[in-house]
Image 1 (cartoon, rainbow, N blue to C red):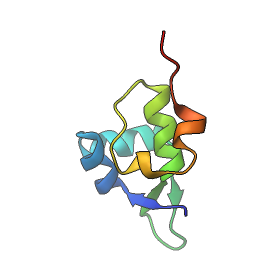
Image 2 (tube, rainbow, N blue to C red; image 1 turned 90 degrees about the vertical axis):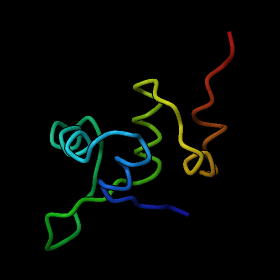
Image 3 (tube, rainbow, N blue to C red; image 1 turned 90 degrees about the horizontal axis):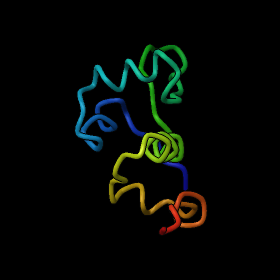
Image 4 (cartoon, rainbow, N blue to C red; image 1 turned 45 degrees about the vertical axis):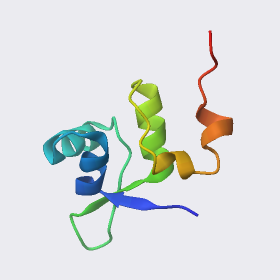
Length: 78
C-alpha cells in the first residue's frame, strides 16, 4: 500500500529541518506531489526511499516496511 508523508513527517524521519525538505522539493531533488487546490505537498514513501538510497542516507524503519524495499534497494555487500 502506498503511503504519503507530509514535509514535516519527512523531515522528522530524516532528522532534518522542514526547510531542507522544502528546498530539496523546490530544486527537484526530492519528488513531491501537491494536494489539489493547496500549496501543501506530500512525499510518496517510494520516492523518499529512492532519495535516501541515492544520497546514501540511513533508511528509517518505517520505510523498510515497503514491500519492494529488499528487492529494489538493498545494497550488495562488498
